[in-house]
Length: 115
Image (cartoon, rainbow, N blue to C red; front, side, top):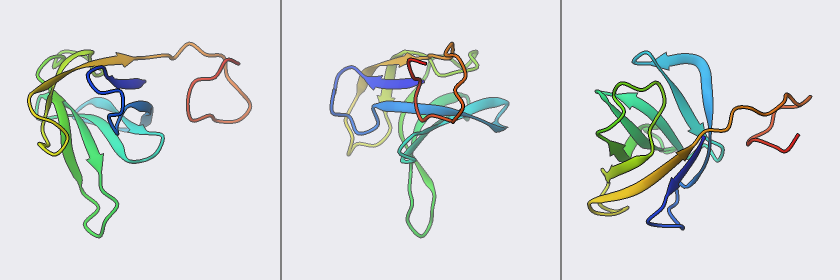
């Protein structure tokens, strides 16, 4: 899927995320950004955009969340709230675009292709 903060074209987490099928989190699939710096996951009844820290503690910190979509199996577009004040205050409009109808390619790709 493609995560896009429409209010900030330079938002550091705008970009492609790949769905992970190895296990679920709270009975939902999760997504990891192709640059490995963020995840989108369903936790505590909300969809979260999580910063993936690669420091010694190797934890995840919430960057944004949405109060919508608790009944959905994938994250929704709409209003998302900033959870990290360093990234912003208040809310932002987020568009989630899912493209899963591409034909298979011989080798795995990081994002959908025109194949």
